[in-house]
Amino acid sequence: MKSSLRLIRIAGIDIGVHYSWIFIFLLLSWGLARAFFPGTFPGWDTATYWVAGVSAALLLFVSVLLHELAHSLVAKARGIGVQSITLFLLGGVSNLEDEPERPIVEFAVAIVGPLTSLAVAGICWGLLGLVADQQGPLAAILAYLALVNFILAAFNLLPGFPLDGGRVLRSILWRKTGNLVKATNIAANVGRFMGWGLIAFGLIRIFAGLLDGIWFAFIGWFLSTAAEASRRELTAREQLSGVKVKDIMATNPTTISPDTSVADLVSSVFRRQLGRAVPVCEDDRVVGVVSVTDVKELPRERWEQTPVSEIMTREPLHMVSPEDDLNTALRLITKGDVNQVLVMDEKRCAGLINRADILNYLQLTQELGLR
Ligand SMILES: [Zn+2]
Image 1: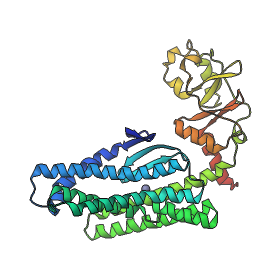
Image 2 (image 1 turned 90 degrees about the horizontal axis):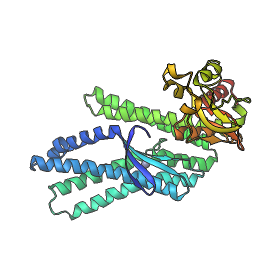
Image 3 (image 1 turned 90 degrees about the vertical axis):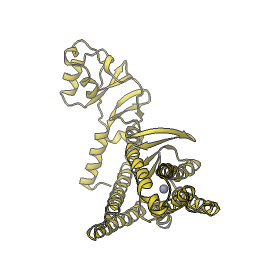
Image 4 (image 1 turned 120 degrees about the vertical axis):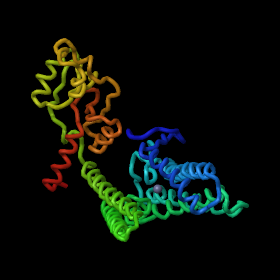
């Protein structure tokens, strides 16, 4: 993910924090050191409040990380690739490469996160009983961690998709009906209703003069948006799954030779609207891809003398076969953060397929009610 800072790598998974998290971390440390701990545990000196505040905020971060790691490690054990974990403002996101293929796998991957948080809450609660000074910083941090991990487990167990509880609900419905799309629709609708409920609850609190209502409304808005987005994504994925790359790609692909000048490329391809990118081929062999973006980086006065080979992308070239389905192509485009992938028929270049082609196809199927 682009807007995140990579921290470490655990079990082959990149762990990163979203930039917004740093701001929340500072805000949280400050809130704990200046308001929560002094209000609940009076009588320490200022430095102790700060040390306790920063430690508790860091340990909350570790708690969220443990929750996400549990999801990722179970997914990996069940054969699902895990790219990375990004820790956000409201928790974390494990970026799984695929959706689970069976209800039981989805159930296991989803439930293990909240169970981990509950276990951490239980351990902190148990340790709290062993601390001699119940009004000291150690007791305060343990009590805080027990509380937030419990809240983390409880919130994530709410049965609205895409929360963990919503995934559990979806896996049960999926198992009962045998229909993933139907199960997702129901679980996502529960998520939307819960989101609206939280927004309404938040607004009532705001009107009653309680400012924490903003948080409830914000989380509710986040939840209903995420539910709708997940539902749309799955619908799109379903629509793309049965369609092959060769069904929607142009049959006579434009290609260009590496020694063509950039000026010729612009006049013979880009001006004629034959696409925003073309494969560069030498004796029927693909040597690169050149796009409008590559041309933009070259000063105009050099277009005449510069050959395409100098500005084209050589590596890495992302490829699909004409027999692959559109999901595979879209996944490569998203994963490589590129606009198009090459379509290779054996060793021969059959064309390009880009993000816009796939999105246009989706729009077309929805407009014409295909499938
Ligand atoms: Zn979770």
